[in-house]
Length: 80
Image (cartoon, rainbow, N blue to C red; front, top):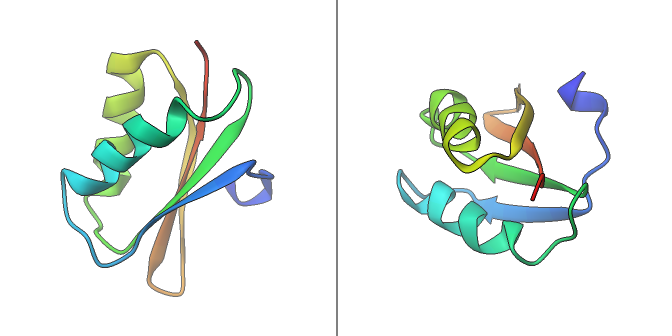
């Protein structure tokens, strides 16, 4: 499902490690409208567990994380 999501914005976190992807997501989520989706692109495998946990604590929706060619795409829908 997540691979079919159309993102409204992309957050490039390639080459960074935790907590940078979450910090950039927290900033970018404020710049999109409620209901819109971010595609957070990272090479740090930690995002697979970190992004769903971050969404649970912040009230946003993690639509899933998919791996493509060594990059992880975490799809996050703004909920508030």
